[in-house]
Image 1 (cartoon, rainbow, N blue to C red):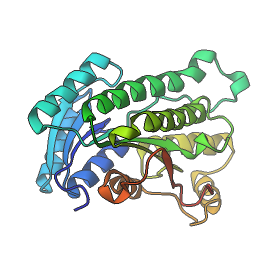
Image 2 (image 1 turned 45 degrees about the vertical axis):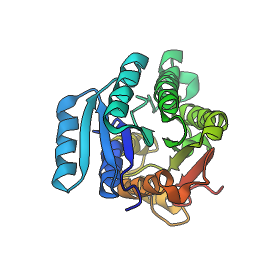
Image 3 (image 1 turned 60 degrees about the vertical axis):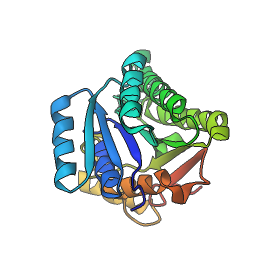
Image 4 (image 1 turned 180 degrees about the vertical axis):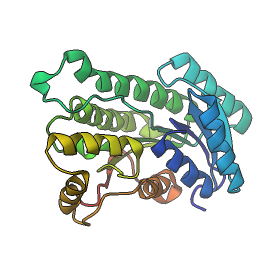
Length: 259
């Protein structure tokens, strides 16, 4: 097991990506603290993990509230003695479908503000309690590097997350803390990605099947990464097998981008 006896907190753990990562981390031996706003959905995920033989606990939290985040982390430290992994997977609530020249500033800035607020609060709080070792993870999309039309502020938010991760990695590296970002092309089995792909297919005058084929054709592997594959990549980056990797963006785009 790659994460045997590790202690992880996952923000947005009841979402599609957060749920996939939580299940993968638990399956690899981590004790997973599921953080989010809605206790019922978190408890359902915890029950699923426990049914599969994993370890999970629920923390009702708000990734935009510094005090709430810090109290949640302190609770984990008091119980477990440490935190090994922190992964923020909450939504940026981005608004897509319009050209920048047709957008309101508020709609453009919304995902940027949300991304920076939540990642700054959760990542820096984790770094403070990790002390001498640990891994802080983030997830972005290919739009962080390659521009696409009508994404609004989403790509800018992703680029900002990656820039933040690089700076944080530089500042906390001397304490043995690693910061790694995964960059995905979007998982079609995620409800959020499915909704966005439907939107862009309609704007392009394509059926969803045509849109998916065209997108996949632009990748080297001729497909897009599934949720479980992104989660598996996160397991590797969180594990000691990636102990020399920090300030890095892991390409999990199926070759939609070339580094």
